[in-house]
Image (cartoon, helix red, strand yellow):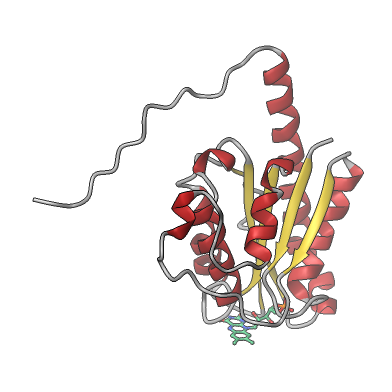
Length: 208
Ligand SMILES: Cc1cc2nc3c(=O)[nH]c(=O)nc-3n(C[C@H](O)[C@H](O)[C@H](O)COP(=O)(O)O)c2cc1C
């Protein structure tokens, strides 16, 4: 059974972001896709210190939730990263987590897997936060799922989110699209459709 990891980057375990992610989890489960939810908690998540120790293949030097997810990465077919909007961006907690996860896990572990972002805001700044999160997937050869609108819900409390009918419909549609992509991938694999055979990766710095 396919499995999706939902990461809640809010300090509120049962807040607005969680409400949107729960709506998605219910849609996944209804369609036979397993979910696991990870709440990043209230404490700061260490930021990347650019030590490059992870390039030796032993994970991040900070032994926390990043390494715990990294160790289980093969078991996930897709990811949803959710965040409240803080001054037009995602939380520092979530971007620190994602910086270290995406930097320390080999690219091919994300390649071809599904990814999506969900943001929750009271009033504004949703699209810049949403775009910021999407930057991670778009350089990892991931399949980024969309919906009928940008994946945002609006509110200050979970009750507000429950009243945001369009927002909740948007995240349900997003989950449905992800289910369909998973099913399409599986059908393709069964028919012998091969994943892209990439060239050896090249790095060109902006040098003279
Ligand atoms: C530090 C901080 C900054 C915020 N910045 C914004 C913002 O830029 N735009 C906005 O609409 N709401 C902003 N909010 C409100 C939250 O994004 C909003 O209430 C969100 O739905 C809370 O989600 P949560 O319950 O999952 O934490 C901010 C809240 C905090 C604590």
